[in-house]
Image (cartoon, rainbow, N blue to C red; front, side, top):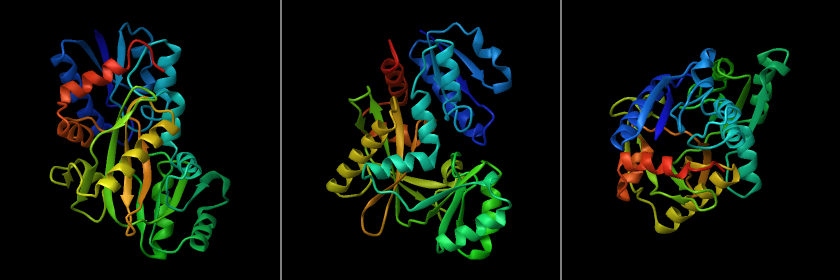
Amino acid sequence: MKVAVLYGGVSGEREVSLSTGKGIIQALKNKGHEVIGIDFDPSKIEQLIHLKVDLVFIGLHGRFGEDGRIQGLLDMLDIPYVGSGVLSSALAMDKAKSKQIFATNDIPTALSQSYQVNRYENRSVIAAEVKASFTTPFVVKPNQEGSTLGLTIVKEESQIDKAIEIAAASDTVILVEEYVGGREVTVPVVGKQGEETALPVIEIIPKSDYYDFDSKYKPGGSEHIVPAKVSDELTEQLQNYAVQAHQLLGCSVYSRVDFIINENNIPIILEVNTLPGMTPTSLFPDSAQVVGLSYDDLVEQFVTLSLPNKS
């Protein structure tokens, strides 16, 4: 088939997306597809308007890639694409909205509160509300951002103002949530809508205090243990929650669901990634490899699941 791969983009995750795109392009070529690589820029929409391909593989991360906007454009152009549609992408990107959906359906979440920055006279009012509602440590982060960009773990009240400033630089809505310490795990989900299965659970052991940007993307920044050394019962619970979260948001083809296992051995859901990192050494391919699925075969499976019609 003729497949266009969109990668790069203009979000804070551009560098990661460049690597994801490179991996996907090579895998598709290895599988015999004709591939067009497009370093996507929203100001150059004409790159897509006259595109003549059988399928688009979205290798973008963050804004204008993972938030439903590029999906909406491709829908209007009647170009099929790999992955989740407009609504599920937007919901997964909106941490506050997705957490409400998870909590309503009995998937444990961290206590949180969102604040629309421009509704407040000044940020000191937000800081006062945060101080009244949360006790340290807690997390301040942009509501719609990936790769822990703009995130601060507030350990002392003197950090609140700066944490709000950092988060608000990335988004008009900030999310404050209780800090949940514990083991960081993630669960890849793949399959036809309604028939998804979870791949092996991955435990992430960051070299820094938490799984930040450097831990995710710098060589040696973290260790991945696949499958995670957790009980069979907890593995099943994590996989069930992951598939349930994927389905509740209406995701398609694949996603990766992040959790913290707290001190009471309860999985607390963090978020659903509708376009997780797909470099050959990323978490998703690491897990797939354990069940005998090579990187190239995994990419080809995503393509197959996306045809002939998106759901």
